[in-house]
Image (cartoon, rainbow, N blue to C red; front, side, top):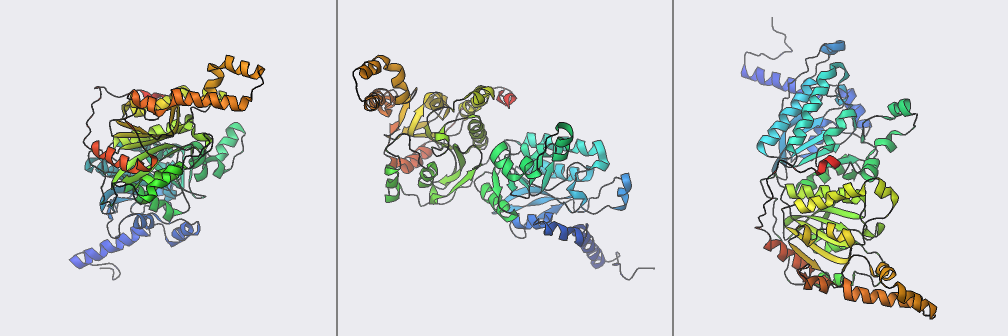
Length: 533
């Protein structure tokens, strides 16, 4: 006898109704109470996040009716459709992406065999079709009931993140907890986005740390979004809420190609090849005092289309700026010293931040524009003991290995080894230009005076000279005779010296000239720089 409440599966209409019922069960498998609890924390559900991220109506779900098969600890009594993750494909700005979104309302978003297999399948599809992969993470980690099986799935996921690296762009959006071994998945991706006061990432939590070491640390201080954006450098953007995080992801993807064999989208641009009044503002941006800071962000915005610059990792190592913009309609990766933070010096964090960004841009054939105002490396025993030599070398490696178009502009200081590191001609930069305010030397004039003119300084002091004025005169002579950009241009270290107002036009022309650049590197399995990380 047929249940009146059940659809008649012998008819097409009945089977369609049955599928709709199953879909409803999949969507609300965890119950309205669990969804309400998620909302009460200011968090959205897995599907709500997908709807916000993707173009309306573009999502095609995969493995919607997959169910876990574990019978451990009574799990056979709770087998929701879809398990703890939603996977599928859709579009962002009309371009295809693959994604997975963990569902915290089901088993705390924990990863078991079925959920792991769903993620693995969508990752394989992303790699096979050459589209960006986005992971939305909100999970308590490996499913304890499934033991080693759950752990093994993490291993398979990590393997695929590694294989996809440099092949397709990979984004991780952390919208809840990511704990234990699960944190290494996001760490293997290209960009990590976290939400302030909501996201957490840590290998061992506060309770474990207290038990093992006796150290007491709060959850937010240990692995919160601010900690990973500002201190650890694991994250690349601190979002104010989930909408902000998803908007940033959409914006970021607009600068990136679908894969390493395709080109970034080019947009129509009304960029003029004539110097404008806005361009001429750069002629006054460099202060008269060589020790006075200025905003490199303002320089960047004056060069790029519509003054729009998408900064990446703004809170970590702020003495160097990285991010994406468009110049003449095409995507460009920008790296620049920031005189407003630590005088623009390089240190371990800045070198590693910039090196990883150069390598990403190179992997996806995005031209690199470098703006240089660097007085050297940050001195100190802490930097030396923490490995500034081996870790700072990563930036040298990244530039020297890169085969994309490389354009470098020296705005003011370019001293010592830091000059070499920041996209110098010797490391393979294609077009190197400088402003007349540039100083290129082993060290600045003030430091050089103490070494080169000891006798003169001593004699002047004994003669009762105004030492401040005398030192300034010697430093100016050194700058003119040794550090002048015209001397570097004479020797071919620079391809030209330009008026600051001509920077935008010069960069447009340089990138146009390099558009068909071809470069070959020696055949090898891979380099060895990552062994130092």
